[in-house]
Amino acid sequence: MLWLVALPPGAIVFIIGHSFGANTILIALRKMRRKVSLLCAIDPAAQFDTTLPPNCVKALGFRQVVSSIGRGKLLPAGDGRIIDIVLNDSHTYIDKDPRTHAHIISEIVKI
Image 1: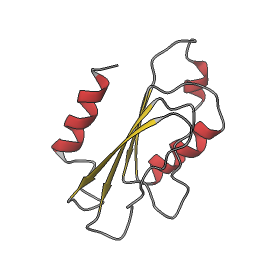
Image 2: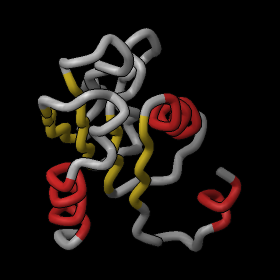
Image 3: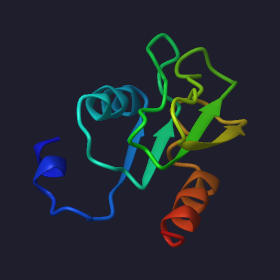
Image 4: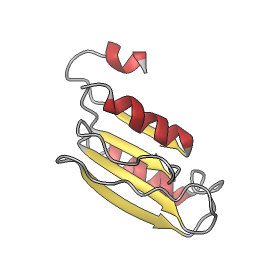
């Protein structure tokens, strides 16, 4: 995540992660102050802390209820806004689903 620290002040940042990648992003963002305009966590692992870091302005939390892996729901912390999206997909398909892509793109164009 060194690239994130190296960005100029005021840069618009959005980050997308799937499964453990989403959990890793959450852990890394808790350790830095950089503001993130949009965080997209696609089916993070539920057994780890899924609390939204306070430096995230907005988050899309995609999760599925079909398979036993993933299923992590983003939890609020601070003033960050979370949009919780439940899709009837498997953990291995949710990141490929065109609806996931459409949601993410629609939020990015709003930034």
